Image 1 (cartoon, rainbow, N blue to C red):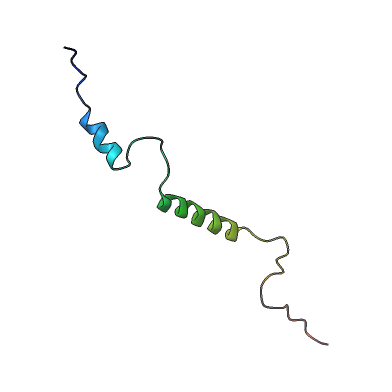
Image 2 (image 1 turned 180 degrees about the horizontal axis):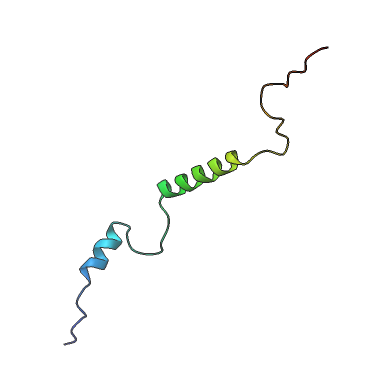
Length: 61
């Protein structure tokens, strides 16, 4: 009679709880990445930035 290989219980447990297989980022990690990218984009100065809400005061003489 042929004897089968012993089962790897650790691998079986990981497969049951979606821990085995291809390495995929979690949704939380994906959201955090997008949030960091947005903050980085907002931090960059815009090409059409005129200096804010305030207009320079020109004294009338």
